[in-house]
Image 1 (cartoon, rainbow, N blue to C red):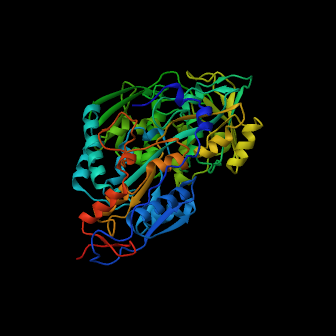
Image 2: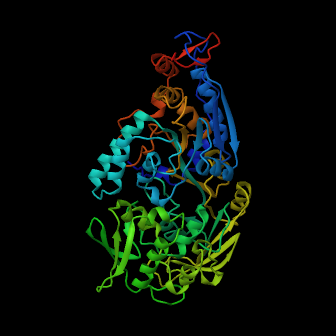
Image 3: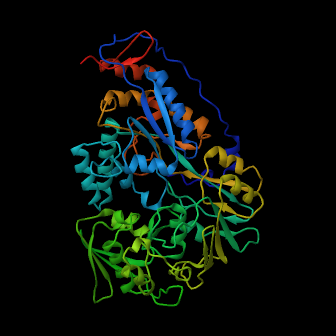
Length: 547
């Protein structure tokens, strides 16, 4: 269950006192013994990792652990983030193991997104995992609205994942957000993966030191004049300040109706949406059912990669006589009322009709003065490194301060300096735990921490040797010292899962599997391989079973 106690709010002292204490490593005897080599030597394991946060040194440490525990050799190739995405997700170019991470997002609170990563037809299934039973259960999950049945299915999928291990989740980093608590109190959103990064937390922030404008710093620039186009988190975050979404996640971590005051599920594929009354856009135009229908039509009739997964099940829309916007789904879609509803904005038709009429709506340029939504914050000015908002005082959830300024900086060092000088009050970029501790050295800065949805996982290429063999994947799991990774490289600021994608502190799934910390045993890793027929030469190098 989610821990919503004070220790997950602002705990600078814990952060600073948790040292980089390594766990002792008992060297396993990998100098022969066991089975006599029968097949060919297991080749050098090729590993790819992105140059992101501290994941390269973590992957290097894991490679050493696997070499010691299994008697293999490894080669680590590090790539820039853009090259990594192109190689791994577009080209599918990795031979054996790819380090991977997904960031937190409100649409990922429900584990359905992460469980989709092993669905055979998902383009994000980079492991090439195929299991018809898994596919059938996942398909049922996507069309099941009942929470009790959903949890049963999530547990069953988690069990399959644990046994087959196509991807191995080693740790789930805490969300770490440096905040100047002398100036602002930002209440947490109490659910795994959100904390103070949810828009409701920003809207509920209160002044502590006389500041009337909340200044947020981040590394990401405002990348495109079209806020629907990019996939970058900074711009998506800013977009949600000024545009009302259908629902939001409240401070208790529950979905609450927002722009839509009522969802009436007529049947599994027919849902009527009733807009909140008396809503208006920042230019004074009323928000109408026509605007909501237009939004659905624009997003479904054109491709917007960030939104396509959330609108794929929408077949058609219509406006009913009672003012409802009826959404007709091509099939039951449980996530329409969950992730899709917190992700989809209400767009003003009188502005965005220009996108609908353009040849490529996804690249349509929105003029700065046309950044008009209906949300609690109204855009005042837009530049690549600075976006200014003023509070929309007519909004039912208007913040009790004057506005927000987002400032883009080129590095974490620049953000750290700005925090110390009070040029910014909080960071949107979540630094790794060690860097966060450094940023919290001034007395005025504390680190807001909470369980996070980000993943630290290593993906196996399952359609070719050696990881087409479950024995190799399980041996890797037993040879992985997750506790050392968390203590040394994450400063203790991460949860250790059971190797699957279901977060150990979420209310979904089962907690019956041993964690990655509990499965660590080099003796067990070697016995798994021995039982499968693998052997070692006199130098301790691993060989395949005899054919």
